[in-house]
Image (cartoon, rainbow, N blue to C red; front, side):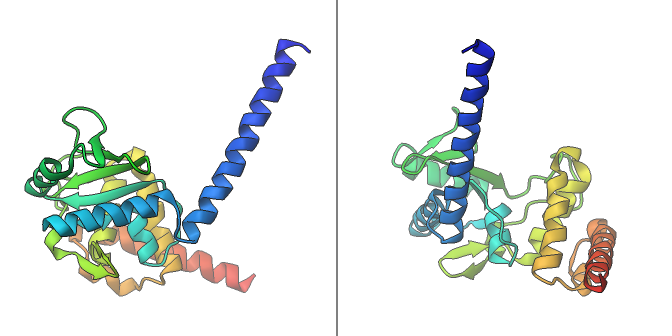
Length: 216
């Protein structure tokens, strides 16, 4: 067999393996048994036990609000003081920094990436703007997890996607939340003025597209 043919078979085998693994992960995720969900429960319990305020953000929070989306990482909002306190207590005891001095960590039991966002910093391009990451003390409890309120999550997603072309997925997340969680047009009133028009544009386009689909 030529090297080209062998390489093609190797590539096909790798793609098939990736497909099978991806389907398996998605199945575990939607059953609530994936590594990322176990890692989330583990770090939230550790933060609660240490008395460190936090708020779940990112794709895992989207799932809690009605948009079911698979993800392989955990995004948490902390204060600088909270992150320092957690690292002092738990670093090297189930969690490690992704590189020396990084905000982000990795769960050593499940191999899951933990991304940390800090209160007071800015979403998207990181530059100062009217919308900043809030204090995690505003989080609401859903089950055993503290989650950023819906309007603040939408606000951050919009500010991120509008300011950073590499974060367009955040705008798509808002659209899917509007669709799957039936977010109302009136939610715009609870958002910062800097992102309100963007929310209304996305809401109207999504509503129009859904109405057209229903008519068809």
